[in-house]
Image 1 (cartoon, rainbow, N blue to C red):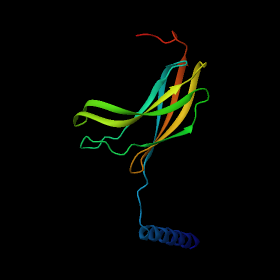
Image 2 (spheres, rainbow, N blue to C red; image 1 turned 120 degrees about the vertical axis):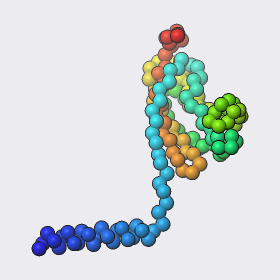
Image 3 (cartoon, rainbow, N blue to C red; image 1 turned 60 degrees about the vertical axis):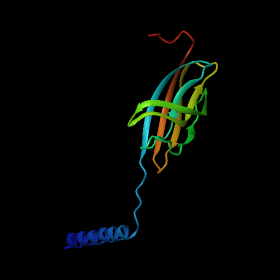
Image 4 (tube, helix red, strand yellow; image 1 turned 30 degrees about the vertical axis):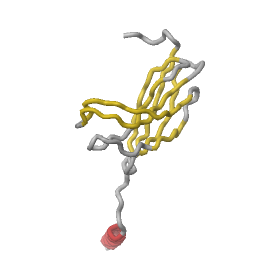
Length: 145
């Protein structure tokens, strides 16, 4: 008998939460994705670590994303510059030129791995967390292919 009462109480409690949730307007939670990237860089040289743009289905530019440095690199520095991105045969767009942000990393007098995290927030609330590892070597330390 006690087990049946506990089960009925659990059903009533769960049912009341479900009714409250159904009455409140539900807004979709924007997805947040995490991406890990690795780049090779030379000491004391600018290295591109990201390009951020927004191309709409009609091949025009949408609002650019918001970029935030969540955790800075320990040895280097990150700089974001504005640019024009040109592309051909991108999705349904045969040719386009849109504004963009380009992120660069530079580490003077440092050799080794440096880690940073960037949050990129797009229109509509979608957020991408980018964990970037930059492997910094001396000039001549990179293998030529």
